[in-house]
Length: 216
Image (tube, rainbow, N blue to C red; front, side, top):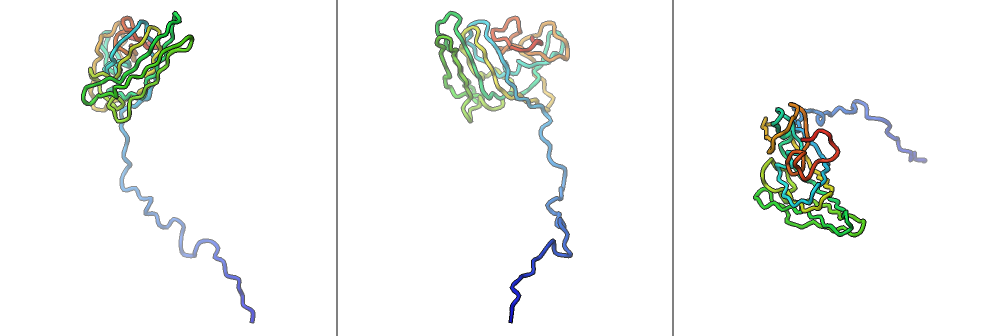
């Protein structure tokens, strides 16, 4: 007696069952949550020293670099919080003698402490000094900070040094307004301006911003 070893193959879905009949995983019980309405911007801002500098840059200085004019002489920071991602510096000698670039996250205030490390390099011949310094992980220098007189980092640089500050700006939705530390000169109300890394006006700063026309 011969046996039929060919098994019947099931083809297609079982009758009576519909694809996607179980739609429980597609039920949305309420609208999804929304991220912050505040504007967050990652920026790489460039500055250049016009004199030898030894300066402590505060979080207020950083937030004052981007401002909006309220009148010809008064302005407010466009952003309310800032986080430093990295600072990169190039410094070349004009005379051929070596020059040194130093960056330190030197904040000592509770809530704004830096790593206290000295990031430094010295030029040699035609090769410029080059430093790229990131704040240590878990130090407050690398976390979002509000405008304050607390030190974000310190610079010791020769004249002509180029500084790139990579940071993240964040705008609050609480309606607060933080005035710039120094007055504006002949500004147009409502316009956005940029100023030096030391928070001073373009005519007085030792570290003017590069690559923009609307300066204050």
